[in-house]
Length: 199
Image (cartoon, rainbow, N blue to C red; front, side, top):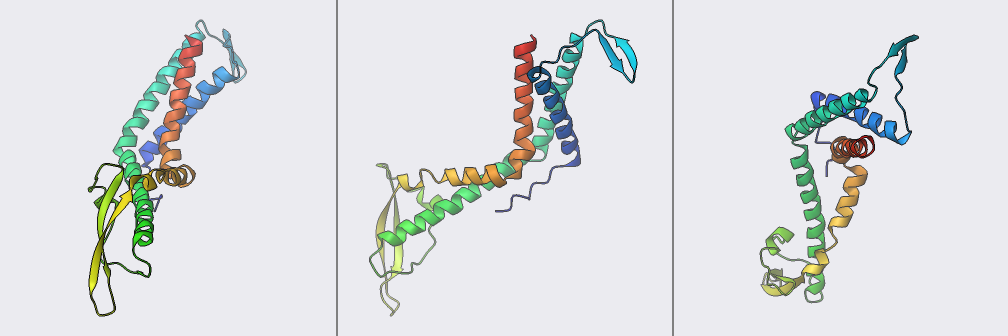
C-alpha cells in the first residue's frame, strides 16, 4: 500500500507548524513551571507588563485559532477519507489472504486450484448467524475439465484480529497519523492542561 499518496498542501503545512508551535509552548509552559513576572526583558530593554496572565489568554486564543484552521485544512486535503480508505484496503488484503488459506485447508486433499473469485467482502454478505459465513467454492474435479463445488462454512473468528497488524503498520509507516493526527492530539493536550492548571 502506498502511504505517500496524501500530500499535505502548503497552507495546511503552515497551519500545522503554527499549531505545533503554540501546542509546544503551552505544554512546556506548564510542565516546566514558567512564572510570568511583571517585567520582561526584550533585546536588553525592560518592558513592564501590567497583566502578565493576559499573555497566556492571548496564547490560548491563538492556539484555538490555529487548531481550527488546521482542522479545516485537514478535511480540505481529504486526509481523513484517504486514511480510512487506505486502512480498509490493507485490511481487505489481509482478510482475503486469511480467507483463501482457510478455503484451501477445507477442500478435499489434493485440490490445488479453484475457479472463481472469493473475497471477504463477498462472503461477508452471506452471514448465516451462528458465527459463520457460507461460500460455495468451485474447483476442478479432474484433468478432463470436469468440476464440482462444495459449500464451506467460514468461521467469523478467523477474521477477528486481522485489524491489529494493519493498525500497527499505520502507526509505524502511515504518514497520515504523524502529519495530521499527532498535531491535533498535541493541540488537544495543550488546551486541556492550560484549562486545568491556569483557570
